Image (spheres, rainbow, N blue to C red):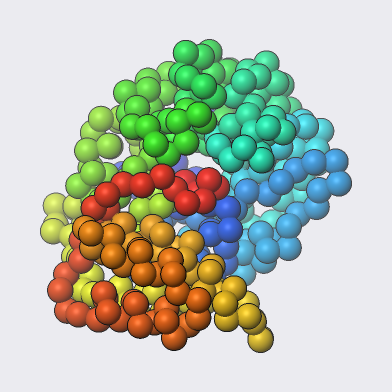
Amino acid sequence: MPNEGSLKWLGMGATPVLALAPMQAVTDLPFWRILSRYGGPDVYWTEYLRVHSTSIVDRNIRQAILENPTGRPAVVQLIGNDPFHLVRIARELEQLPVVAIDLNLGCPAPVVYRKCAGGGLLREPARIDCILGAMRDAITRVRFTVKTRLGFADASGWDELLGIFARHPIDLLTVHGRTVAGMYRTEVDYGLIARAVTTVGCPVLANGNVWSAERAREILRLTGAQGLMIGRGCIRNPWLFDQIRAVQAGREPRWPKGREVLEYVEALYVETAPPGDFVERLQVEKMKKYLNFLGEGVDPEGQFLHRIRRVSNRAEFEVVCQDFLDHDHPMPLEPFVRMEAANPGVD
């Protein structure tokens, strides 16, 4: 399927595309369902699907695709390094209701990059060239997209990577403006994202540190990108997509009140709990994963995070949430203090 140089295949007009970042153990069906209640993104990415010699399509990812409740398109992401098996799984996924298949070239988790997958592939541009060629030839029914970082240890090979991306007519490139080694600690290099916009010949989404509607507008200005991919920011603030739309339309964004944020937390607890009987302690621990990000925008002293990390049951969990969120004051939900992601598979 040829590259048309636009994102009409997503059903988008002139407004910037807002995409949900693929986040391991986060962007599953329950989280899609939650986000859709708050406006949600224009397109939903799945968690990454690990591809190796014995891989099959993951049951949870298949379920998210087949039961997609959002009314918006879905993109499925693959992570691996074997062209034969990446093609094998891609051809199976083409039969499902997805608009694109995405290749992960950016995951910074050591357990991934040490196996030369995700961000680890950025150390081997020749292998990337081979994989892109094989997947581009094989994927004909849906679009083929790539999500990448700027490089592994540094961005000195960025121009070489952009040349590889340009050589294969991919339909969309998402750029997280950090290196793999930079994890989530370093500043995002929006200038290098802008270089991709003018080089690769396909639409580009900018990714990294999109935490408010005003910042989103500035990132779009700095990069010239055709849209944004948002991960951690929408865990903290599920209203963010609609807030960005408001600012783009020249309107003031609406901030949720504390009790609305409390309702969001309660909905997360219920929706993400396993069906049937489950171990309460494990669900509380799972909720801490989300609240590590939400908590950045609750209080400048960090007391919410300090207390929530120490709860061990639902009653304690709810007491802390009510102490900090049971009020009618508007909450911008911007991070008071930026911190490194607690989950290296996120954003």
